[in-house]
Image 1 (spheres, helix red, strand yellow):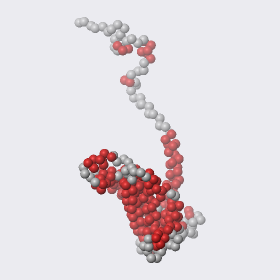
Image 2: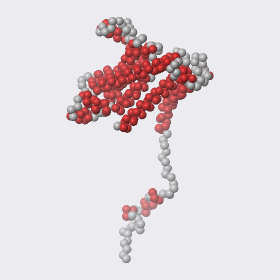
Image 3: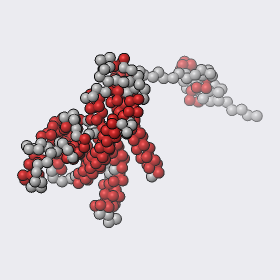
Image 4: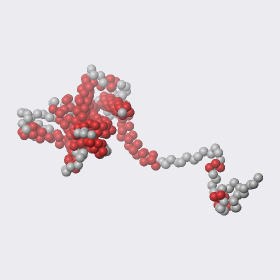
Length: 343
């Protein structure tokens, strides 16, 4: 039988590509993967400590500013921490859940006042968030198309959001004064809508005044978020809807609002949490002692803690408020995620 011989300069079992290389180069080549010893584990790459070092300051600040005070407040709610133990609050007697039983009992005076304040806060939050969203969405939709002076209007609309809260609310305090305020001057002297100058910071009108200031401060944030969401809607959708004969309201209902759904879900939740916990607005507007018609729960907890020196009951109210907001937030997220999955 005839046998074939390898080409000249080629050893048996050697690839032709390596035939022309000197023996020294062949010897220096690394062994193939199959020639590595079996059973030796591959070395894992070392993890860098830099990300953890960069996160360490944020974690420390989060613990010092939020987590630790929250835990201390929860512990204070289990103590009879009154003015008799405030000098050394760690020696206050442990009462367990008695503070919660007192403040959550609607038949007691403290529970009845807390329930009334909770109702006022719920109505205040619903009206403020709803009207702020409507005003912000309306302004963002009207300013979506370019026209002369649009940049100036955008800057003017964002002014209430850019102002410091104390400056803005103190200004409204002067505007709501009964005798020298601009609101009564316009209503009584200019427009002649009412005969007598009403009181705005006491009585039934205090809730209306608080609601006006809250909407004036929060609707620019809704306007800013919705305006940013409108920039992500393709113009082709509006052009296709217009070619199908859809008018302004039809495009708003079928194109704009569905495309703004992700933005609105986050926006409504943020506005709800901000408004329900709002303390600066009523505190500055009414000077720390709001009328019963405008007694928000945040101001009620402050007055129960720092004016009556009952920090145990005030801490119990704060923990109960925190649990309520956590439950509402969790339910809202579960409901919106379920609707998103169904869609």
